[in-house]
Amino acid sequence: MARALKATEAPARAISAPRRQWKRLSRAIGDVLPKGLYARSLIIIIAPMVLLQSVIAYTFMERHWQLVTKRLSASVVADVAALIDIYESYPQDKDADTLSRIAGERLNLDLDLLEGAKLPPPGPRPFFSILDESLSDEIKRQIRRPFWIDTVGRSNLIEIRVAIPGGVMRITARRSQAYASNSHIFLVWMIGSSLVLLGVAILFLRNQIKPILRLAAVAEGFGKGREIEFRPRGAREVRQAGHAFIEMKRRIERAMEQRTTMLNGVSHDLRTILTRFRLSLALIEGSGEIEDLTRDVDEMSRMLEGYLAFARGDSAETAMPTDMRALLEDLRTDVERLGAHVSEVELAGKPTVTVRPDAFRRCLFNLASNAARYGETVAISGRLETRSFLVSIDDDGPGIPAARREDVFKPFLRLDDARQDAGGSGLGLAIARDIARAHGGDITLHDSPLGGLRATVRVPA
Image 1 (cartoon, rainbow, N blue to C red):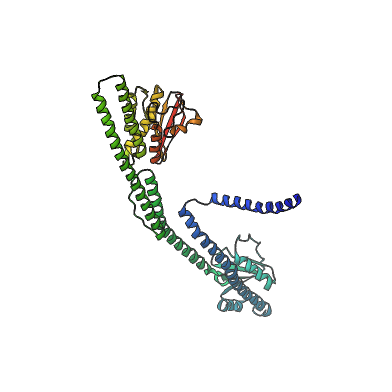
Image 2: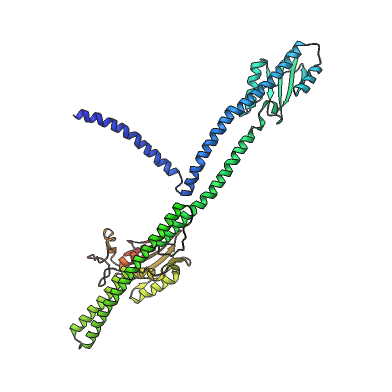
C-alpha cells in the first residue's frame, strides 16, 4: 500500500513542478508589464500589430525581395557572360567598339577593355547586402572566372570586373538593373500605416480611459469626504458603472442623513430630560448629594455629546482648502489652556490641504488633549510629503506598550494603564481615527523622542 502511494505521489510532483515554473514565469512577466489600464490596452493593440508586421516584413524580405533581386542579378550576369562569349568568339573586333556599342544600346551596360590590367585586391564585403551576395553567386555559377565587384562605391551604379585573356573586362550597370530598389516603398507604407493606426488607437483609448480615471477620482474623493461633480461618460459599460456609483452614493448619503436625523431627534429628547434634571436640582436646596447629582448630570451630558459625535462622524461638513499653519497654531493655543507646555509648532512652508476644517481640528484636539492629560510637555509638528500631509503630536508621558496601541482606538474600551479619556466617554481616540479615515488617512502611534507617545495623523494632500 505504501508503495502504491509513493507511485501516485511521484507523478503528482512531476505535474506540480511545471505549474510552479509557469507561475514563476507568469509572476516575472507580470512584474515587467505595466500596471496601468491605458498602457496594457496599448500593448494589447500594439503587440499583435508588431507581430503581424514582423511576419509580413520577414516574408516579403525573404521571398519577394530576395527572389526579385536574385533574378535581376542573374539577368545582368547572363548579359555579362554573353558579352564575354562574343568577345572570345569573334576576335576580329579587336578594340571591342562594336561590342561596346551593342552593350550600351541593347543591354544598357558600359563596357571597357583594360588590356594588361589585373583585378583589384578584394575589399571588405558589406555587412548586409543582398545584391553583393546574389551577384557573387551568379558570377561563380555562370561565368566561373576570377572577378571583382563593387556594389557600394557609387550609390546608383555597380561595377563588375572579370579576368579575360590579356586583361580585364569592366562592365558598369545601373543598380536598378540588378536590384529591386523600389522595395523599400512597401516597408515605408507598412510602417506609415502602422503609425497611423497606432495614433488612432492612442486617441480613442485615451478618450475611453478618461471616464474610468474620472470615476476612480470621484470614488476616491467621496471616500475622503470631498464633493466632486461627476457625470458618467464614455462607453456603455463605463456609464453603467458611473450610474451605479452615483446610485450607491445616493443610498449612502440617504442612510447617513436618516441616521443623523434620528440621532438629532434622540439628542433633542435626551437633552430635554437632562435640562429638566438641571432645573429640578437648581430648585432643591444645596447639599452634598445635590452636588453629586449635578456632576452626574454634567457627566451624562458630556457622554451624550461624545456618543452623538462618534455616531454622526461630522459627515455633513464640506471639505475645503485649509491653512494648516493657522489650524496648528489654534490647536497649540487650545492645548496650552489645558495647562500643558507646548513648544513652537514646527511646519515647513505654508501648506494648504483640503480637509473638513472643524472635523480635522476635533481629531487633532482629541489627540493633543490626550497628550496633555498624561504629559507635561507637548510638541506639535507638521510636514508636507509628496501625496500626504502628516501631523505629529508628541508628549513626555508614560506612553503605551506597543502591543496595546491598537486597542486604545476601540470604542468604550479602557486599558488598565491606558491614556484613553480618563473620566470621559472612552471615545476620544476612536472619534479621532474615525475622522482621519473619513479623510482617506489614518492615525498611528509610535514612541516619542520626548520619551512618551507620538501620535501621527496622515491625510491625503
